[in-house]
Image (cartoon, rainbow, N blue to C red; front, side, top):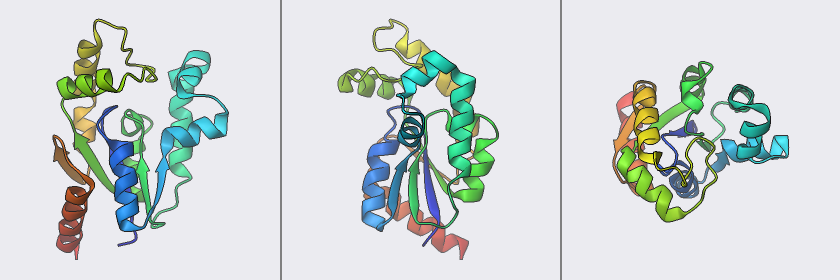
Length: 173
């Protein structure tokens, strides 16, 4: 297997954590798309959103996605909204295998509050309506997320993802 693997899902679904673990297990390189954007812009994602706006950020996301060469043994953790804008899902599907980590909004809220990181531009921990925002965002994105090659519901781990990927590749041959 040499194809790239794109991790999709809502914020706090485990894309970066599981993506890093999966890359290590497969002896692939790992890319966090948000980190690539932060490095290229010299600003944190929150700053980009606040200073330049979401449309500008989404363009940066698409630009970075287009720079990823196919079949280069990468695991890519996309941003939560990446597949939902600028026809990015088509770019992802052309670039490799997409894996959607389908974690429900109530679990996402729990993870966000437990991590205490308040670095997500669209999901403030101070907000009383965090769960409402998560529910609305999940509903607006789910149809695009479900276009992924592989959908994994609930909690999972890198070994399970590897097993599912292996089964997926065997069925493609």
